Image (cartoon, rainbow, N blue to C red; front, side, top):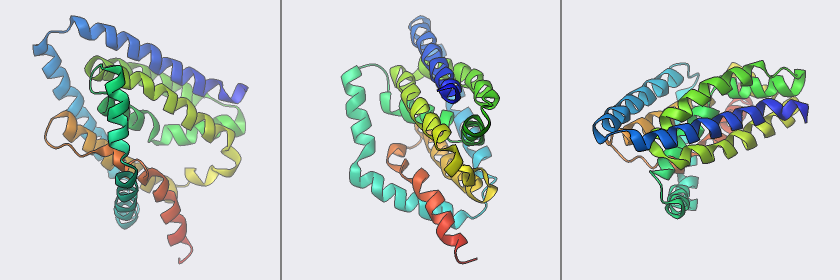
Length: 225
């Protein structure tokens, strides 16, 4: 249970930050809310590019996106998220949920931090990440509402699972796996940026299975090296 404490703290940081941002949004005029949208959108695209540049094998990233996108379309993940958001009737739920979940979970700090917490009982990386996520959740929630807060559940489940399975998931910390996985997430984050700026609705939610396809493809390719 002690090993899970950093993941719990991280989730609470997202919840608290989201609530702060959600209530602050009511006092923001349309003019300033628009410039906030632009700031978040441009920054999201920048983060996506930063995540992509470290890629090892772009063919793995490409096929991960293709296969994952087909699976996501089959299960219509994006539409299911939108239906969930409609029941909450507050902000752009699906964009807020997917954007925040990707930003909070697809990165080296999540994987390395969770595995370190599970193997060594050292939660310092995740606790540092909690501060970053707290600030990000304030900004995102002030723009997209409650979908950001619900991403705290994903943070707890994903980071908690990686922490508990740390002994069998250490391979994910290898650059061979990590760089392509992060690059897949980077493309999705880039797509979120396009949506925020209203350039193109990329239905990023349907690409979520790509995050599971990427490590599998990396493993298959490694068998032939």
